[in-house]
Amino acid sequence: GAIQIPTVSFNPGEFNTTALAAFGEYIHKVFPTVFRTSFIQHEVVGEYSHLFTVQGSDPSLQPYMLLAHIDVVPAPDQGWEVPPFSGLERDGFIYGRGTLDNKNSVMAILQALELLLIRNYIPRRSFFIALGHDEEVSGAHGAQKISALLQARGVQLAFIVDEGSFILDGFIPSLKKPFAMVSVSEKGSLNLMLEVNKTPGHSSAPPKETSIGILAAAVSRLEQTPMPNMFGSGPLKMTLQQLANEFSFPANVIFNNLWLFWPIVSRLMEREDITNALVRTTTAVTMFNAGIKVNVIPPVAQATVNFRIHPAQTVQEVLKLAKDIVVDDRVQFHVLESFEPLPVSPFDDQALGYQLIRQTIQSVFPEINIVAPGTCIAQTDSRHYTNLTTGIYRFNPVYLQPQDFRSIHGINERISVQAYETQVKFIFEFIQNADTEQRPVSHLHEL
Ligand SMILES: CCCCCCCC/C=C\CCCCCCCC(=O)N[C@@H](CCCCN)C(=O)O
Ligand SMILES: [Zn+2]
Ligand SMILES: [Zn+2]
Image 1 (cartoon, rainbow, N blue to C red):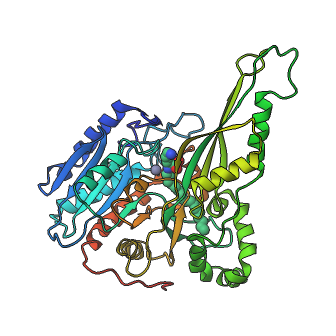
Image 2: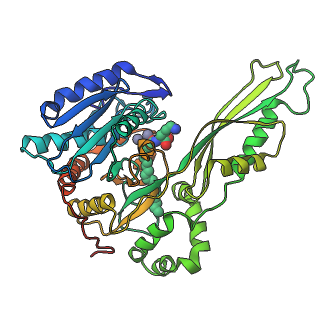
Image 3: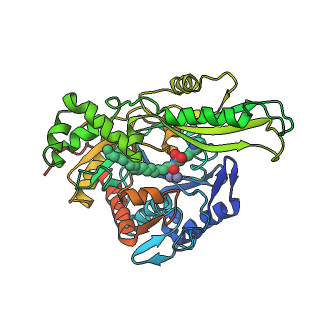
């Protein structure tokens, strides 16, 4: 039902408002207990986002927050095995836009809470549930407003759990077993518009270079000159060190001795697009506009480049690097939007949020040996909540293979019924585990 409501975000400020309103009505209908429980306050923020305040019985315990978003990116029918907003089930999988990003979390959080309430559960620790409606375009109307509202109320959170990572299966070629990656940081972004202006004229007597030619060369230089490999700074080294013993010989020796073998490993990581995204700021030319008629010299050419900034770099550093690569005064640079990478959240034995996630993974997925800290290569709504907590964890309790990753924002996005049920179970247990006063004891490299 949730997948059938096309809550598409197109551009900042441009949403399917009819669908967003319908989604609000839908959750009221399917989770009646959540909405009628006296110790749960429901508020609509920014017209279509939802904030639930679940009042726990023990005010001495610091509250936490579960995050998810109800909007999705557009999904034209082309290439889908079943229509993207049909929500059809086929061979044990629910297909549709949002099944992994991120209506699975929206529905699993509310479904787990509904089940707990039906069993007369009253939490000890208070918690919030924030469901943003514009994560896919900025979070300016949803997450940012919720964050400001909570800040005005003086709320400080023990930690936040959002989307942004999974139980990863098959992302590192020589690693046979899946592992859980909990992202403790998140890449930043820089959207840069490159522009070249030239005097228009008749195409029968063209200049040696047009605005299109100059811009194409600049864009090509950016594509051909990757940003520096930052392997060694950021959580990736720790991820690999924790995984070291899961590799067979000789990879286990290599990963156990990164001080010696890091040059080889950093090169290996560059080979695949996804692991490459973990070692550097990536450069993606995503839009190119120029020309008005076949026989007119184009006056203006514009290209948009989307950089995803490695946690060890800043927006200013990337902007300078981009200018140094292009080195052409005829190309103007316009910063459309930027966001710094997120700080690394604590993941030591004292980090309540991280340890609760680890504990719940061990209980719900006993077959998973390794829970490792990592970096989210995309952006999430959680970046708007740094004023409320230093503990931001991005993790979806769902197995993900590389082809599933490509379905996110791509075609044939799907989740198995069993995986969705397990996600509900995970949240059901997580909420109860969070009632503990003490941090669960960490067992690194268990089993
Ligand atoms: C060593 C281990 C190898 C790890 C490989 C990492 C695999 C990546 C796994 C999961 C990443 C999935 C991220 C899903 C969250 C997607 C969130 C999203 O789409 N965000 C948008 C927000 C746009 C906001 C407007 N600027 C985005 O980032 O584009
Ligand atoms: Zn998402
Ligand atoms: Zn997304």
